[in-house]
Length: 229
Image (cartoon, rainbow, N blue to C red):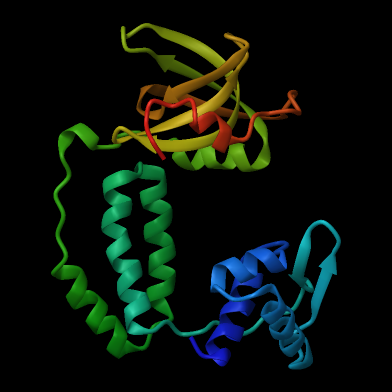
C-alpha cells in the first residue's frame, strides 16, 4: 500500500471510530507507531481536523466530513457476495437491514456498475441447510440492547421444550455450532447464561439501564464455551 492509499485508509478508519489509538492504527495498517504519528500529522496539515483525548485516542472533530466516495467494482462485488453469507448465517431482522443498506450503496453506483452488479447477483446462488436456518428475528433487537446496555425481558424454551420467562442484561452475541448464542446475566439464575437465540420466543427491550456494573468481558466468557476460538 502506497502512502496516499494508507493516508486515505487511516482517515476512513478514524471516521469509523469514536476514538482510535495510535497502536490500533499501527496494527491495522501494519506500520510502526512512529509512522502513524507522521501520517496523522500529514492528515492534519492537509486540513483534516484531528483531536486527541488522553486514555482514549485520536478522533476527527465532529462536523467534518467528505462527500461519499464511489466504490470500486471489487468493493461492490465483495458487498454483494457478503449478502449470501448474511442470508445464510443471520436472522430476518439482520437480513432486512443488510438488504436495505446494500440497496442504498447500489443507488449511488454509476449505471455501468449497476448493470454488472445485477449480472453478478443473478449468477451467485446458495443453498441453506434446514438445520441452520435462522427463522427468528431478534438479532437486531439484541444488538441494540447490548450496545445501549439496557435490560431485556424474554420467554425462553429450553431443550426440553419448557418455557420460562427471563430478565437479563445481555453482554454479547457469539456464533458457534451453527447457531447464534446470547450471553447475558440472568436475573432468574443470578449468573451468566448462554441462551440459544433460536429458542428465544419473544424479546422486549425494557430501556432500563444495566443494574450490574462489573460484567465479565465477553472474550473471557468465551473461554468457558465448549469450542475453540
